[in-house]
Image (cartoon, rainbow, N blue to C red; front, side, top):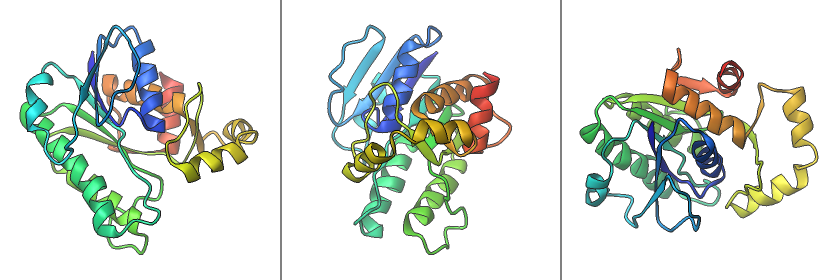
Length: 222
């Protein structure tokens, strides 16, 4: 299997990248980002691309891909809706639209979030925009799956790039493993996310939208 990852420098993206590199069934990993990951791996091919509004310049490098893991995202804290929409909806659909043209029907797994608003009419800004993004992806000629994790425990030295998240994880670090064992359908790990995304890419899932309990079920069954 050949996979494409957007957002491999983020916390979830790092977890997915790690699992892909460890999985013997993944032959090639293509990472698209604005900067280099700074690692050397035999099956990793990096594409540094600055403009996420338009991916036409790199289309020729994306042949033979089986699945895409779209982990790119930003915190909505302090952002105006138009700016958050430009990144969350705009960048996602730019990539998904390009892939739907060159690989129609391919598996596209999008990392959304628990509490996403599918009606697009709620009071919470980030949830509306995420809902709009999910709905738009489901209209494209892609085999799209939408992951809505809640709390995620970073493992294997992985850290969030968002300062406020790093502080929160640092404070809660002693409790997260306990919470994950006590509430397995509420708390996931970066390993869980990576393994579940690979499993869905290989076998699919009965639902297009996977909440935390569904993601846990996938990892338990794999």
